[in-house]
Image (cartoon, rainbow, N blue to C red; front, side, top):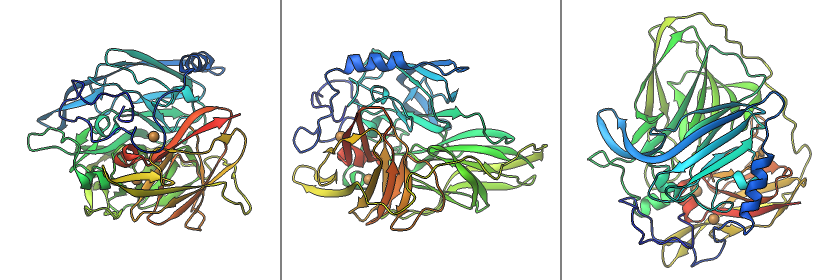
Length: 471
Ligand code: C2O
Ligand code: CU
Ligand code: CU
């Protein structure tokens, strides 16, 4: 709704975290509004969503509302959450199921839910380009099939800098038929929040925050500051990790101990990869195998110093403490091969387009974050079945996490070098002055789609592109 040309900034109920300085009727690019036939397209998509043979409909009610939440134990904060919790409930389904979510908006402002990473039809994508935002008091149903296994997440696509910061986000797990069998599984949704001295969430800040994106000083795992996790010695667990922070890059380390990457945004890798750290940009996910450790060990789940060239400096910070308790038997097996991924690009190719991430001075706002010199850039359509090879070019001196809605891509090159492994991604870091080549194939899901920087302040400021997938 930040982008809604009809939005009335003087309307009541926005509270202390009211909106920043601009809508975007005043500069180039796209006005956020759904197409005229939005109702018919939605009804078609809803009716077409049927479970595969042996699948089921997973029906969930979500209510977005304000509540008290203890990010820091003993300190009550006015927060926003789904079903009274931060994060919202972990939604779990299998490949071939249909997810049906009835979302009731009990907030004081419009909202939507975007299903980050899911390959769904455009009318279910949850942006204000494909639906009318859900006004307070209204209920809206999302219904779509789940074709791909992986760790996904859901969050509003309205006034994101406020709504996500206050706690509206949750994890979504889609299980496949051939998952590795480990001893236990847990979901860790990482975030940070900026609290004032009364323990309340600070309103959006001034220029440093607009430039860097907000990095709150209180680090959260599943909505709590500095939790203690426990696991049994001798066991190996699968951790599904989501970075839900507005702007924080998490260079994840488990006290320097090795762990095994099993999957990324779009599900399993072809083979496990042993590492001692992994970089999670905002919106990134990773599935890792953790352990085995010995009884009595204590490890820090931490984010190592990562300089993403912001005004504010970075340091190593702790998310959680892991305590290893008495041993339990293990039946964990990590197969040598996890799955087959067909490369989209094998020989030399030319880029079919360039997406330049940049910024531009603006008299009104100081600086706009832009794509191809335009805030909310209107990009060329892409045709179903035509291979897309995009060069993401970072014209700035800071990192930007690029996110494509609705379709997974493969990374072909980062600054001219092939990546270490083949994977399906929906979010990728574009380093300062860097060039990342991605490839993706638009399948038959025509409609309005978008890509954007997932630093929420940059997204809001216009570092995004809008395009149609056409037949
Ligand atoms: Cu998770 Cu348009 O984003
Ligand atoms: Cu836009
Ligand atoms: Cu950015």
